[in-house]
Length: 385
Image 1 (cartoon, rainbow, N blue to C red):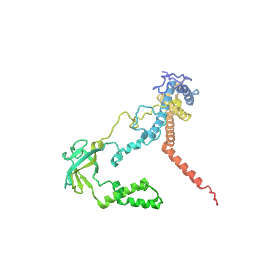
Image 2: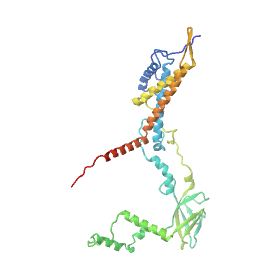
Image 3: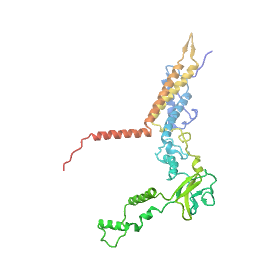
Image 4: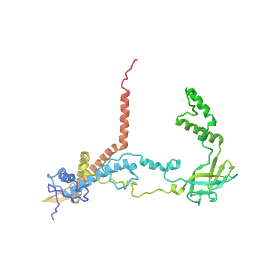
C-alpha cells in the first residue's frame, strides 16, 4: 500500500488564526515574516532538492513558539532585575517593553520590621499605657487592672503585649543645659568678650552656637546620668515591672507597648505583585523586537522545524520505492535540533546575564578603575611660582 505524506508545496499564505495560540496573529510584521520564515526554513531543510514533509501551518507554529520562548527568556531576566522594585505594586498594568526605574521601595519594605524593633518606624502600632505608682512600692503587676491602664484594654496573658519604652527618667537634659544658673551666662559673656563683641550695646545674655554643639552637650549630660548616677531605671520580668529608685510619691508612669499579635502575624495583601508567578510580564510585541532578537528567533524557529521534521521522518524510518526503499534521517534531525536549541538558549542566557543591572554596574566599575589607572600614569606638570 502506498504511503501518502504531505510535503511542502513551495509557498505559504498566512492568515490570522493559522497559529495554535494566535498570540501575534494581528501583528502586521508577524504576518509578513511568517510567510518568509516558512519559505526560509523549508529551503534550509533541503527544499527543493528534496521533499520537506511539513506544511505552512507547521512552520507558523514553530515561529510562534520561537517568539514566545524568546519573550519568556527576556521576561524572566527582567523579573530577576526588577522584582524587588515591583513587589507590592498592583498587577493591573503590563510591564512588557517598559523601563522600570530602580528604587529603594523593596528594600524599605524589607527593613520595616527592623525599624519597628529599633523604634524608628515599622508596620505595627505603638500604644500608650500607664501604671499608678504608690509610695514605697517598687514592684507592680502589669495584669492588675486597678493600677494599669492600656489603650487597647486589659492584659489577658503574658503573650498579649510587649513594653517597648517606659517614660521614667530624670528631668530632660536640655532643661539643665539651658539653666541660666549653671554658669552659661558667665561663659557666654566670656566668649562674647573673646570675640570682641562684649562692648556692644544692648547687652546680650546668650550667643547662638551650632546645633551640633547643643546635641553633644545633651548627650554628655544623659550619658553622665546613666553611668555615674544610675537612677530612674526599671526592669521587666514576665508580667512584673520593678521601678528604681523606690518611689517616694504617688504618680503615674507612662509606657509604650505593642501587641505581639501585630508583630508575629504576617501581613498579607491581595491584588499586588507578590512573586515570580504574578509579575505582569506578558507576551512581547513582535514588531518591537530588534534585529538581534529576530535573528535569534529565526534560528530557533529553524531548530524547532528541524525537530518536527525529524519526528515525522522518524515515524516512517523507510519509504518504499520501486525495487528498493529509502532510509530517512529522522534521528539525525532530532539530535541536531536538540543541540542547536540548547546552544541558542545558552547563548541568549549568557547575553542577558551580561546585560543585567548587576553586570552593567560591575562593568562600569571596572571601566572607572581602568580609566583612573590610565590617568594616574599621565605626567603632572610642575608649576613654579
